[in-house]
Length: 144
Image 1: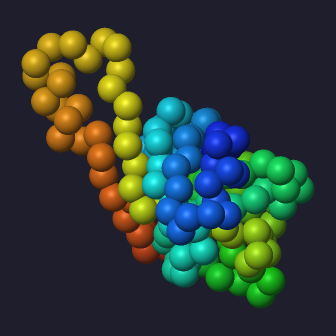
Image 2: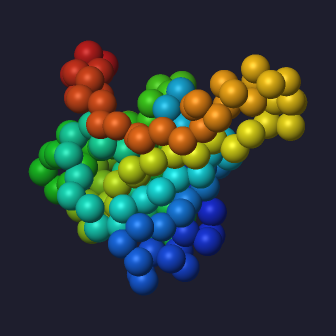
């Protein structure tokens, strides 16, 4: 399950936007291990948004998931990589107060192997992207 770096905790209380770093495979292909995120703390969450939340059983652990749908008692959240686990199928509905913010942008750092001019241009064109709402998350949930 993607954890977020500890530096995330320090900026959350003081600014409406802050950085986070992804660790883990559960949001592949949307987010990869090592991606940097710009999080809008306290933003309104809609179904399909990628959100940062406190893990319901380990509240010192911050995770990033997709808010699939609102249910009684909070949000049903899913990872984009259904094989990785670590989402509401394991721990149930996440209470509203544990959903901390919405991911707005991701920055994918350049890999050391990306040295050729073509690879650098390709990286530059895709390094920074908005993280968009995926309304199909709710449809995928119903299909399971």
